[in-house]
Length: 332
Length: 253
Figure 1 (tube, chains in turn yellow, brown):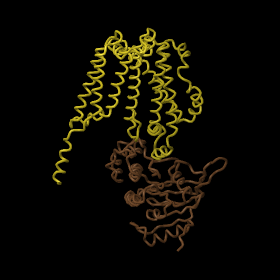
Figure 2 (cartoon, one colour):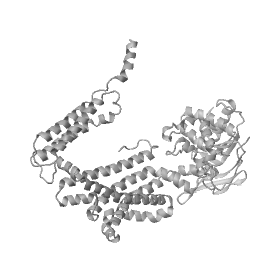
Figure 3 (cartoon, chains in turn green, brown):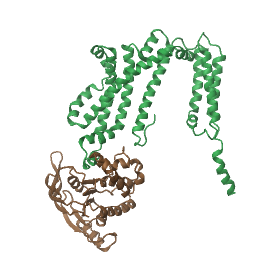
Figure 4 (tube, one colour):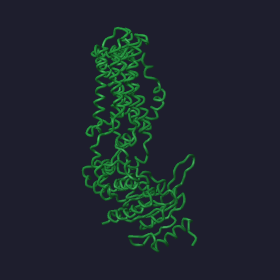
């Protein structure tokens, strides 16, 4: 009897992983959606219907391949994250089918305010150059402004938290000016700066400056006095205390400020692009709306969402890397 | 091979400025610790023992009186006088090794002391945990890391501010033994703050019994019992009774 248990144990690692039911369901749902898109005629003349169906079918096929692979012992561990996404993949297929039905097939939702999925796909296939350039222009506008504001806010926050004098003079100013939305400076910024680029950079910098300043400051102020005592008894200079005690101890708080500042920067970016700058995703959306090209607007919105989300993901990756010493970090 | 320094505390009084009135915590403290001597400061909690350590460390100047190390007045902090605090106060963003090397790093002598850092980690039994972060350590391991961080500076006076106060009783027993072994090896002058009578008697050459706040020295008791000591040795039991009597906590015989 012990021999059989032993045998079972040896055989266990080679056994197939359990079937992935939600994967099979999702794959079939995507293929079903593809069939719906291609076989049900559109209510109106729309482009890229066939391409959309092909994409959905290809995606469904890939999921089915994944569902087969997920049961193979060699691939099962690697495909574990995909397994977790099963319900989402299924719901997304159903959502696409529903969207396709109420727009392209049944024409229940008024056009042009509601775009069919294939119309948005058409924007990506036909207008990718202009969209790509808009992304580039937006990034080139937001990145220097954010870096400037975050960098200055960090230094200023450390100075406020460290020096009593700086704190005394800066605190009331930060309290009064800080909560003011950066966009309120828009009229002043556009006449104070000769170029709309300069004005936008200033506003974006301002938007990220405030949260980074306040959270760096509070982070530095909250550092336990015991840490300074320990370092001082070992001969640390004030400069060492700032660099190697105050700043690292404040980093968790600084990252909260960087995260909030990033959100504020994007908000100002879009407003600035809609108001004065003649480039970027904000401008693209404004321009598309002017032409009643709502599909283009939705496509740009989607790209903007991906851009902002990627930036936040990048920031959180950096934080996880730098603050790996913390336990129980919030996952993004 | 005595590495310790002679510590003179001359008529030291200290007060904290609270709102409107001064809170006196130390009153005319006067004693000398010989080089390499192990002195315990024993008193009720909140009596000002830790304040005395802060003065010796040079973290604060005394309101009155003088403190001298090897005849030189203490004017500020110095790595030759390091403190092991009640909480390990390890920097959570640094590994055990990163914490241990804090002193040399702060003084810009990291390269010279690389060997010393590894030795200190080995000495406290943390050589295998050099890359661990403080949140991965148990309470006893964290205090060992804190001890290594102090030892790296080759202190002439090592101040121990109830360093074992928050450990569980088994870890505490083990670390009391380790502390004595370490002191016998390195021969620094040790100043142990504790409110545990047995701990003071097990470790120290001399026990200074302090009164309630403001703390004065009530008694200066020499512990002659040779080491290794055991807590049930008759001479220690007798001293324990005497000290508890001084603290007004004598057990009815």
